[in-house]
Image 1 (cartoon, helix red, strand yellow):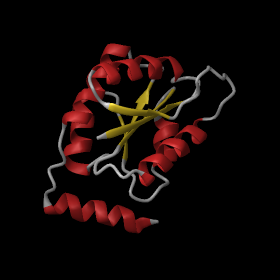
Image 2 (cartoon, one colour):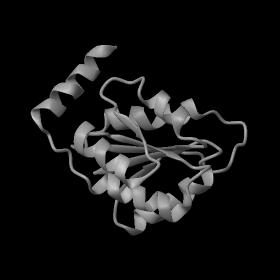
Image 3 (cartoon, helix red, strand yellow):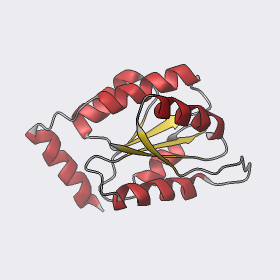
Length: 148
């Protein structure tokens, strides 16, 4: 699994720690964030970078992780793309459900309210939870792709 990671200025510092964590855990990552903190950047550009790379990936199960202050803006931006099922990850239970039931392929983290260790646990839960692939879940995901 290849993981594409991006963050705006509010998620910059958590992203830096997350990249180290993911690398040390042996994940293949592609950093789509800025190398230096830019206080006036805008979250849609990072969502676009990550989602474009994810959709163009030849990996069989690519994932994206996006970070901003609340996670909400990134989630809204990511979900504008067909075949993207972005979830807001504020605890382990919700991301487990988003993976198991909805086959979430993008995780959006609220950097302003998560401590690094909590964020890493949420990410691990999300990465390790398989999609259940029940017929009703597949049907619903197909219906999502037909909405817009």
